[in-house]
Length: 305
Image (cartoon, rainbow, N blue to C red; front, side, top):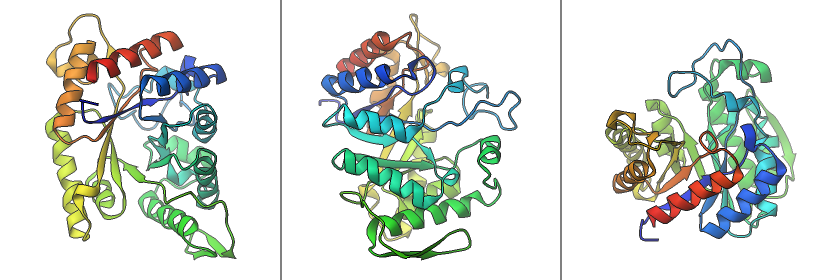
């Protein structure tokens, strides 16, 4: 691809796209269009009076999020209807899940897809969702680090043995193992999160933003990798873009995410020049139906080639 950056697509999962037929058709047709990967997100609920603002736009949670399919189930359906594309999460809220169960679920997707899984994990932003799953909001960063430790232990050792203040795994066989250790991408923007990515992840899951902010955060990731004795050039930056497609050009300050196809693809080219390795396009908040979503996907991938 002349663009030089891989392009992924957010698979049907929420709002009007939350159906088996939509997952199946979008997965199959996007693979045929040449997309490199398919991605899911992770939302549990839409509080009527949220304690925390949505971390984008004016802070209002998108109304389409009221219906949101389980991410692992969606990845399983996508795996069954594709043969080539990588399958990833952008991102699972790692602290919600007992890590032994999360390890099994993700290893199963990797096993059933022939080793195509990319693991993407984040802390999440909603204390309401943490309360709903019975997980403490406080000390979530330390819990997140422990989840990463458990996943790594289960996926790379046999027999498995682990114990900390949260979980105890008596020496056991836990299978299936992933076909290879799945690439691990972590999401977030706080300095501590960026440093964690540099220390222990294979890459950063970020969102479309003004490029000076993007490159400054990426510098923090790379510096952390160097300080940990890791090769910063081995890390990947994967950027999610949820574009709002407009017919007339938007003001420059509206980019991203709102603009014409030309404006948005120009921005994505600039992001690639700034160091982004892969772009995830999510059209579920701007497309009218499956056909419109796939037409937009085809237009973007053709324009960017």
